[in-house]
Image (tube, rainbow, N blue to C red):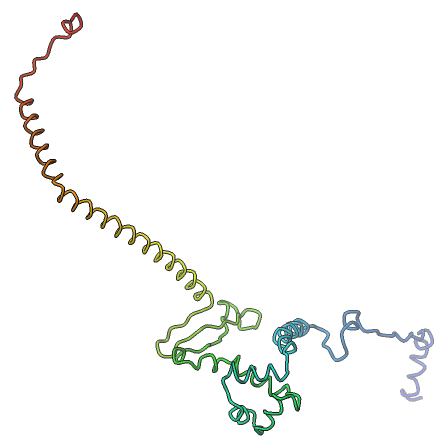
Length: 253
């Protein structure tokens, strides 16, 4: 008998004694089952970033949803805020002049994208810095990394500052607040200084008036004469010989 035919006999006893194994049903872990489909087993901060993004989106989306888009608001924004005529507004929005006229007269409703475009221009930095005094100023943004740590979003702070392209000066919001406080204190000191200067001027003028009055009435000459007489009396008193009496005689007397 060949070895291939002996194999079942050799292992037959082991096969007979072996009990059939039950098939184990593997269920997902509880942490993984609670997650949404397609989400990783380990949360790498996706939920936190999503919540932060929703909060940031609500911070700028809520004011947009509260905008009042009608003919009156469009006319006020176009005429009194941006100081544009209908032709300039039509060229800016890439529409016909009659469209702008119909929007303002209420013939057709004002498209929200057109109103939002004018509103964004009125709130833009280019519009606010269009004045000659702010020609060299701009807003710059950067990330301030925490030293000693690797570059991750959690260790950085987003900051904005006012920068002058011509001089290179920059001002943070904290510095501007401090400058406002110092300027208010300087104004208070200036007002106090003005009050003190006015009081000094009044006292100086009063002193000059009294001096002129004394000179005109001859009071100064009389005082000088009285001073001379007092000096003469003091000189005579100094020449007198003063004898000190003994203490016993002074007590008996």
